[in-house]
Amino acid sequence: MRKKNRECNDPAFFDEVFAAADELFLAMHDGDYPYVLPLNFARLNQAIYIHCALEGHKLDCIRQNPRVAFTIIADVTIHREKSTTYFKSLCGKGLACIVEDEAEKGRALDAIAVRYAALCPQPTPPASIRRTGIVRIDIEELVGKRRQPSGAA
Image (cartoon, rainbow, N blue to C red; front, side, top):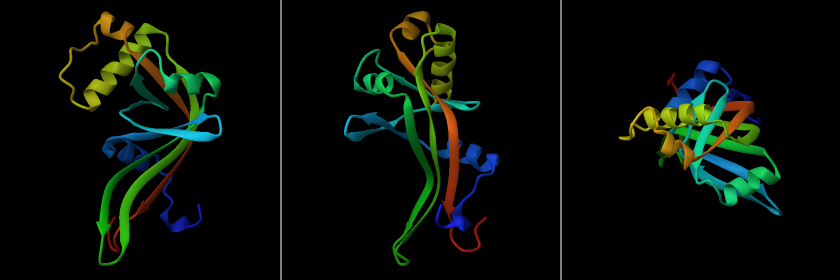
């Protein structure tokens, strides 16, 4: 990172940004160009879970190359007079895999439901688990960055 004074790699900072961010932007390999999607997510330990259909382009990309990158951002404030933006963000890399184990899929769906305060039954019913795809991203690298107004903690 060029501006080392903005780098923040404290695990508590990671937790804070993961908790505050509403979406995760996932970058996958798609031939000649990256393929990037905004997604809902939940983090459990050192893994990120996303839900999806049982088939589709996202899963095709992951099957072809499981190496992915992601970013999340929280607490964004644009300061127009100073032509700057204040934020907290994380950028990471990891290996994605399509989860087949129904117990793990259930835990992931429950975590996503809790995170977004979804009004769906919990624990997730077996029929819902079977008709929903789950991708786990095992985090291999994570870097935090923040820009805050002068005097902010």
